[in-house]
Image (cartoon, rainbow, N blue to C red; front, side, top):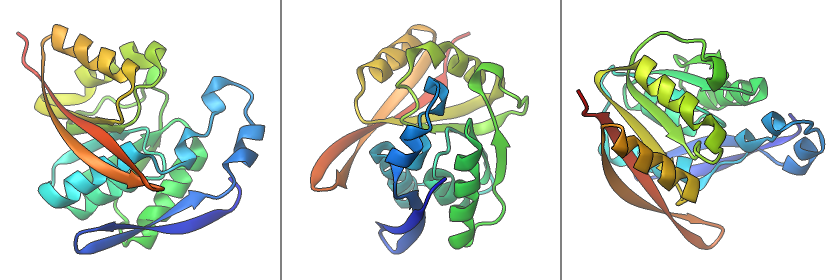
Length: 209
């Protein structure tokens, strides 16, 4: 995994502590296939935007949440802090270990962690919400995501996806609308190293027959 450093993530009335990988280049040197690229090691703007939105606007009150591509774990940690029962999944074992470590340093110890490949998704449970932050960058995985939504979302449940404006994400959202999903969108501004990034947060419900 390499060395990590702790960074503060400050929301109104609360600061979360998140360990990030300091030397991502070291992990990049170990990459042998596309599956090995260490996207999980970085705290992405989409995760910051979704986490802050949830912190400011949402109380989950025992709802069951599935997070896809948990990465460093921030979104699921915030959801758990707001009362959710959270299952975090990722394809990379090191990501889940670091997510669990981050949960622990924030006093969250009830998140469940599952190693999961979307192409052969191991869970058959259904959830009130399915979450994902910046997970739409690879179009070849989009059909598998749609299958997970159909198989793992409770009737009447909501998928919440955050994205910084990638074209592949916009195409995915448009295709969902064509397949009978109703989508509401809110925008959250995130500031990262002096840049202002607009994160779109999509609230997706199936409205077809």
